[in-house]
Length: 381
Image (cartoon, rainbow, N blue to C red; front, side, top):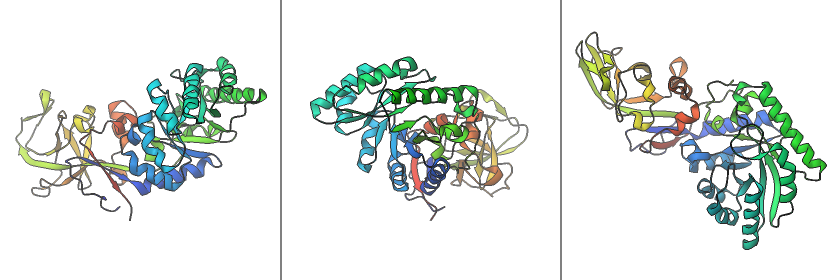
């Protein structure tokens, strides 16, 4: 891997390998063909920095981009690919969304009418897709109401009803009864609509977990899959890893102090660590404000010169204390780069490692990197 495109100017930085993201995209595309891959770039590409990631995925051949809200959608319009808001659209977002030809989800008939009225006012046609709730329980049209809503939507002026989609809540369980039944009901809805003359050319259900665990959701008559965290080589900790994707990120900081503390000395808030012998201790310039889970206290590790070093005591907001007892005197000094996530081989520290320790999932870990953590893009060459 090359050096970062920009020398980090922060104490803590995350390196994102754009070549790895592109390889992951092509791997997913190959696995699901002839379906097309929509890149989900919500929340600033899950906090990693959307601009360069979108640029690379656009070049790689993404069929379009999916986001959660208008503010996330607008910067992606310039790439010339379809941009879709997957969730609800708020009233104040509709005019700008229509003006920029954003694809909007229809979660109920009232929002469809509002989008239609605004499209008429602007003299444009807006692509819309039916968002169906088949079991997520969060947003969308319930199964008994889909046909009625669809019939009404196709009557509304200046709307182009092109697609339909739904979402899996437990696709990480694999092809279990719940997810399989959910997909079957969704296909039943699509067939029922077609019987009434409403044929929708875009049909998608598979999220990242389903791409890995539910092959029945990644074949025709579905037309697209939605790849989000898979593009980053991360997975839900409960799911299978059918696709051999590569981690794209490394989180790094600096060693700021190396000291030998005497036996009996305590470390950190709460004095949760007490040294039983004289110990070489290091302090690194990253803490929970940077996204390190507090659960790493007395449990996690970081890498110094490729060597695993245990975390001692409770993490602080800005600093974390580690054991350097495996190094000889003078072998490591302040200024050494410390890897919090990343590394090679059996000693690699992964996003999933942190997720398991925190009792959460990979999305939470990646989205928790603090605002002072610099995002730096790297490549292989």
